[in-house]
Length: 226
Image (cartoon, rainbow, N blue to C red; front, top):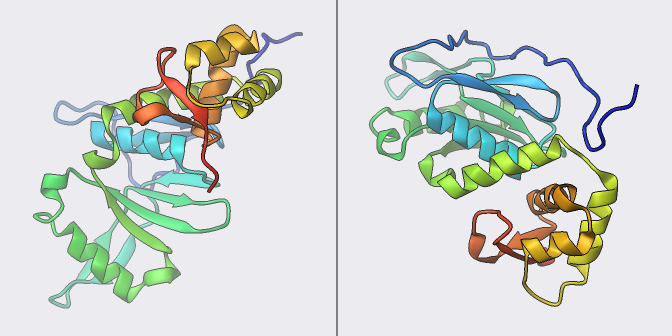
C-alpha cells in the first residue's frame, strides 16, 4: 500500500520514561505531553514553561536521547542533611555529553534553593551523573523561539530528501539575504520546499535575518561557517 509522499511510516508511540507519575488533569497546573521525534516516546511536562523549554531544546540541540524526570539524585545540603533531587530533564548529545536540566521561572530560582542544590550536586557527584548542570528559565524560551521550535519539529516529521536537496542547492547559491517565499519558489517544491527550508534552519544550515520568527515573509541566508 502506498503512503502519501513526505510522510514517514507509522511508528508506535512509546510510553514516557519519567520516574514520577504526572497526572494530566489538574486545576492548578498546566500539564500535558509532547512526542520525542527521535525515538517516538512520550515526553511529559508539568508547566507551560517546561513544555516551551522542552520544545526549544528538542528543536535546536542535537541530542541522542532526551528524558524528563530522570532517576533521583541523592546529595547532602549545607546543613549536612540528606536530600533528594529529581531534575526536570536529562539530555545526552550524540557525542555522549550529558546535561542535567532544571526548568524554573527566573523569579523563583534563588528563593527555592535550586541553585544551591545544583552547586552541592556538582561538588558531591559531578561528572558521575552529568557533565553539565543547568537551570533554564523563560529567558531561554522566547515566544518566537517556541513558535519556531513547533514548526521545526513538525517539519522533521515530514522528511523529503528531494525537497531537502533542492532547498540546499538554492540556499548554497544565495549571494545574500532572500525571502523564504523566494527560496521556496525557486525550489519548485511548494509546501514541501518550505518544510525543507525549516528543517535546514533547524539544523543550522541557514539563518534567519535578525532572528525573526520563521515565516514566508522572513529573510534567510546561508549559515556562517563555525
